[in-house]
Figure 1 (cartoon, rainbow, N blue to C red):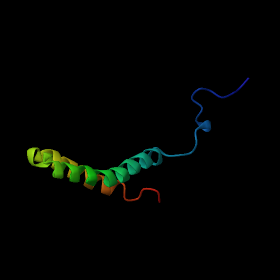
Figure 2 (figure 1 turned 30 degrees about the horizontal axis):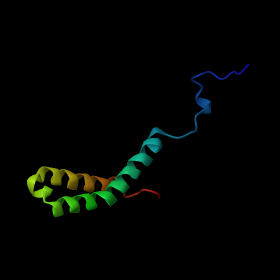
Figure 3 (figure 1 turned 90 degrees about the vertical axis):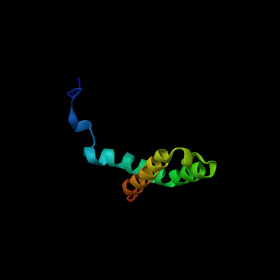
Length: 75
């Protein structure tokens, strides 16, 4: 019979919560910083940015956040 309990932490790899959360945040930040400029450019060309400047401002803020969060991705 096994001595392992359902809450046995010895089976969990030694990774901190920061390391577990950091990778997906950097991944999303990196790829959003790559994709969002194309979305913003297409909205400007289509004229949607003139109709909804708050949308453009939000996408620009998201792009800047993506640049900051994704700067150390895959290092």
